[in-house]
Length: 269
Image (cartoon, rainbow, N blue to C red):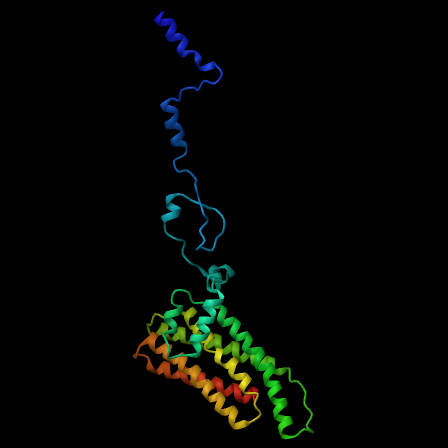
């Protein structure tokens, strides 16, 4: 009877609803086949650049060394997307800071997230503002002196404004970057581009004041504008470099004043 009961209990695996026993060897085999399960994290990583579910890779992929940078990344658009990751509040805050150079350290504000959005947006705005208001200022000045003189829109103002503003705001920070690298300073090109880009903000505002058809008043406005912009650049460079490279700080101040004089002579004659 005991043998019959044991046989009946072991042969019930074919019955409906019964669950077959799992052999320990089969468990070990299954675990050996999948040494590292592919898992997904939820919610998606909102702080990164990628959207959607994130798949966890192997430990080597997660904690191993990152691939070395190469020149392909320099020419890749995706490499620069992080420098446009700013919202309106951040941009407005940096615009206000550029108008008040003695308030606080601008480099300290952009340390965690320097952007190129301000560089492109401010430079492009200044190009069109100079081209438009420069022609309008010439018209007002001619009408103020002699109404009989004919006036026509000078489209060359656009070309002059483009090569001068874009050239200045790209070449000057680039030259400073290579020079400071040569001098052994830990310079950052993106920071320099960001700072010099925001330093042009005050020129956009002063361009509207330069429409006043009074020559001496225009010179006073542009000198004050150049001094404010040059102070912004020089003070931030001094806080970044210290007193060891004071000549480079003075050169940056002079270059910014020279840009102001060039804008006055070229666009608001």
